[in-house]
Length: 419
Image 1 (spheres, rainbow, N blue to C red):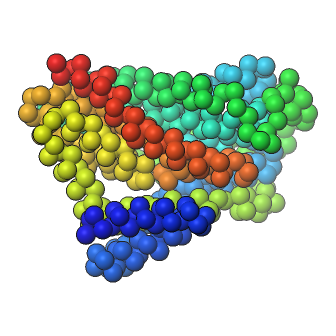
Image 2: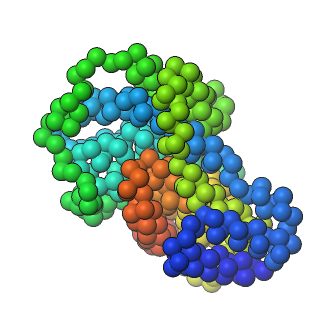
Image 3: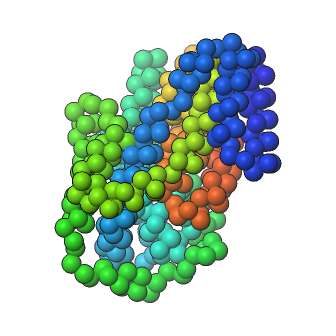
């Protein structure tokens, strides 16, 4: 049954892509059919796999920033950033890497996603390939998430310590930063000199792109800018107080207040919610939930663990972690796969800290997949005309990282540390 469910997943993916139909709708229908007819699961169980929290996140963030775009606040913030940057357009991706990493390190990695609705329009305004900005934000998210104060870091080194594996939180953080900076550098090489069709060249000065930037700020724009700061501050405060913040709910709350202040912008923002991306990710994640329910993920992990060559097992476990995480929760994958890696560590042939670090980072660097929370937010924040291209390129990019991540990280961490 797990193999049949995996085969159907691949088949639906290929068929929907070949026929150019909405993948999310096809995958959702297939999830219900496979779950109920093939696996014998109750329909309620299958539907419980639909990521309502992701729907709330995408809808809340795009609605909130839709108001900020409709009333001109995003343009004003972009203009301020452009004045600071001046003609140094090339530093914008590193700036957003650092900004996203800093916010992500403050407790909740998803807080870093508030930079996407600013960074993606800014990239287009300055002639930067949106792929480069998306990867800058995605790698910043991943790097900051492994800080000792943030979720991925706490889950990874906490699980390692429970298994008596000596994993220094700062070592894990350093590995994550190095890996993500290397990915950003590769993206800069591939995308820095490419301007997609229809994108203008960077203007010589911010004033040329935004001639209204010196006009006085309207009251609604001041209130909106304060609300943008308030979203980040609320998320960080919740994390500091030990409360798991829901970025989507917080964004909806601030968005509701802004809609009362500026009803016209509130009405316009409803049309900016990217329901297509919600359906895309919802259908994929629902099917992945069926795969988990029928034991397909456990089957892949057990197959990796059963390999007779420890280093090969390490590569395959990291590959499975990356592949599944590209379509599902990174935190959940870390909690599920770290225990599967423990027998390899217990044999004494592989260094535990190196294997757990490699597995954790491999499961995170693929989060730019358009079928995950991070990638979906990046696509939803891009211009409408860029979304199809970004969905395709981010899919290929994340799948390349699924393969290359384990090879590079196992080769540079596990092999030297296990000699």
